[in-house]
Length: 207
Image (cartoon, rainbow, N blue to C red; front, side):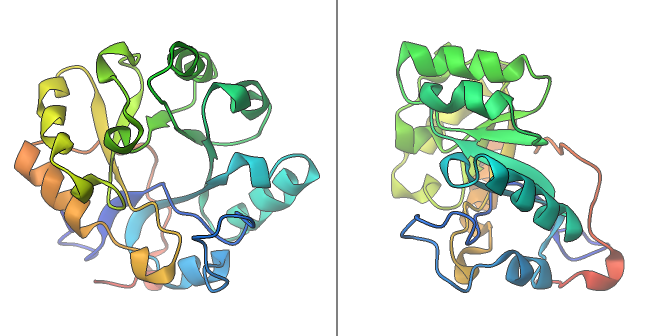
């Protein structure tokens, strides 16, 4: 879905940048400044991997994102990182929930913060959505959703969860959501928009 008013997709809260310094999929060109220059969504957030932005680095990370008018997220890879994540000044969490009892508990603990918890690409991680707290949001992810037909199973959870679309962009040419939004349409799902629009109209780049 593209807005008739702005020509932009409504939201992307799952984008990586060079702050994910040791992620081999992130290219040097994928800077915060580049993502800001090529905004393509009305609501945008950066969610770099938490293990790369801990400690004093997180303050720099948060200030940089806020200076570019991005929402501040972080990607939390399962239970072992949850308690540290709760100590960070983030707006939301993108969460890896594998099919393990401790990871389902981790999602519940993150929810106790009162911040949105987005369960990322459950089809790629083998997440049993029947065990996920229904307060979580489920992401349909442009990076992984096309790899098999398991996305069709999401239709069985339309009354249990709210859904969002993410790009999981690690490189400039991944900054799109074409397949994920087609899947949303085929499933007849409506996206949950989590935050107010954070894009100045004069900076919009229509697609």
